[in-house]
Length: 244
Image (cartoon, rainbow, N blue to C red; front, top):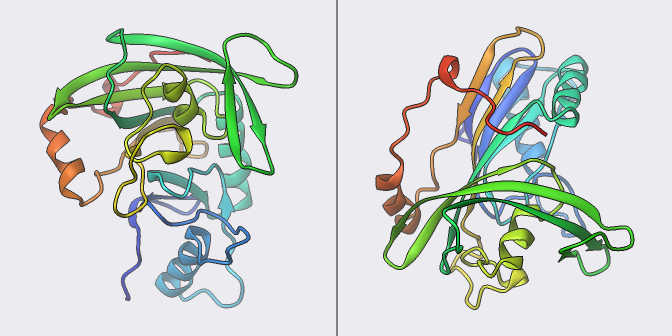
């Protein structure tokens, strides 16, 4: 079987959860570049010898320059039930982000109202309700500091476009490499240091607690921060810390 540009973290008859590399599109856009969905369909078709078109549903997405966990559905049943879990905020999402300017507080809840400019594909954060802006909330905590940078763990409550990026930028802590939201210099590979690290949910069909953890990108800067990860989480011990 040929190699694919993603790592499979979890796979069963209903779900395919993968670790996406930064720089890969999740779904089609105007560039026409090959997407994670394309590769996932090829992977299932080859592995199981599927004839004809392969069903693959997109449960959620992460931005192109972001790495980490993406949930895909192999059946319409899996897609419908996972969509419901995300909609009801019954999926705990944990991200890691690296910033240069550390936030003032070691942990906090951020609440902003986000308004997206579709033409420019940029989101603006407001401190109070504004026009059609959508309320957006996340929790963060400082994991540690290394070489002048700060590693944050983030749990978004809502799931707005560019939410983590723009909310961190709003408090003066843009993510490393994120030129769109105020970081002064790009990363060499055009990535940003935001990684979809963990997902925790009750499997919609098997009803089992399911924990997925995505290894960090194989890049020296990211790998340095592994020394700050002192957690040893097992699914049976992980509970939802923040309710939507």
